[in-house]
Image (tube, rainbow, N blue to C red):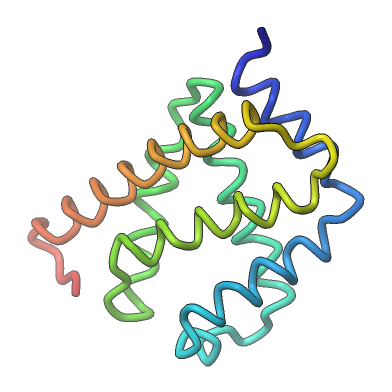
Length: 144
């Protein structure tokens, strides 16, 4: 039986040649769900590369037991305060949309086991995001 990390890496390799289309589909979905967010993106193409890559890397990092993920999530949540209040559900929706777009791009290599692996680590990622939101909200620093 393949590990989650192995399944996830295989799906990333399968989707690699479709990566620009995957990102485009992801951001179409995101802006359809959150149309007011489009205005904060100065250059969607550039931002989409980073947001997509980081989201996938964090989930893969969690699957590999990497400790660096938490620090990056805490920093992400703190930096995103500049965009106003972003509820945990908005982050979670983006993570789900990322997995869905990856699944579309990785076909026919995408399987139920692969989807389950990504969703398992998405749940861990979302828990870290909620933890970061909570910690920053309770901190003595000004945080919306």
